[in-house]
Length: 190
Length: 264
View: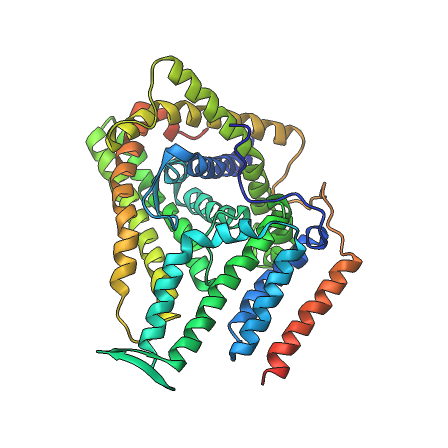
């Protein structure tokens, strides 16, 4: 009989590793920009943790994923504030998908697919929008550190939106599809 | 996929490779911090030469470092160009509407460029010469004080180690499942974006299921071996502060003196 806490720690760790693995396998991600903005499956493991274990698990997995990218050296760092916002903060924000985990779980157990998909949509959208804001601010900080007074906030908006918006659509599709096909992915040990 | 190296660690035998990871982490953080206190082009160039010397010391080819800057070069050049054109003052060489190329602008542009490149180089030095596991150990050590405000730092470092340990396994497993699906006639990486995404679902689904199973097994094993998440732990890899770390610290101290005393 295992304590739930140990299982929680390990599941979060393995799914974090998963996120990184999915991101570095070449053809599993679709690079939009050379600077690292890509549409990939990397966020899905984080969302799975977020819906399985709720917000706490999601935030933890996201945070670890952000740190892992810096540690391994796949992160792009050109400014301290940008590093924080682009990695630990942006990815931790993904965990907020777990905000609606209880509702999603309930509707799936009642077999209400439509409500379930709506909750997943809500969670994933909130998470990706927050990630977007974080990357957006990182971009703004990067530019305002070089240029004063010139308004190029738009650049960061377009750049980050260009890969995060398609990611949002794909992630909602895949996450709700996965859970629907394998409801067991959502159930944690009693 | 066994050959697929993840991360950028380069095995080597240089002085920097042998430094204590805690020291290297602190050094990189302070070094980047110092770059923001540089005031004249002379000091920027001085630090740039220092950075190049440090890179040389690692024994890793310069090309590897340059590769790290390449994807970001357009972004950097774009920002630097804007900076040059929007800064006025000094001798003005060229003026066009709100934009001008002036001596002030060129100096600031050069400084900004050097700073960006140095930040990338120095973080690359850290990740090229330090194994990710060592960085985990160093982070654990440096963040230890957070224990007193009830941050479960032991658990976090355990999780990072587990994640690092499992990435190669997961890559292997992905390869296996991919071959199994290919044998069934699946085609990866072709067709429209939507079709490519669809093809990936039969790939990730078994992988997720396997991971859950693996996590369960591992939790059982940890429990059997008596793991308790909030107990004091001993460590397999012990970090030792050696003579070269003392030298390194003195060097770092010297740099701080240069920036905060000599420069003023």
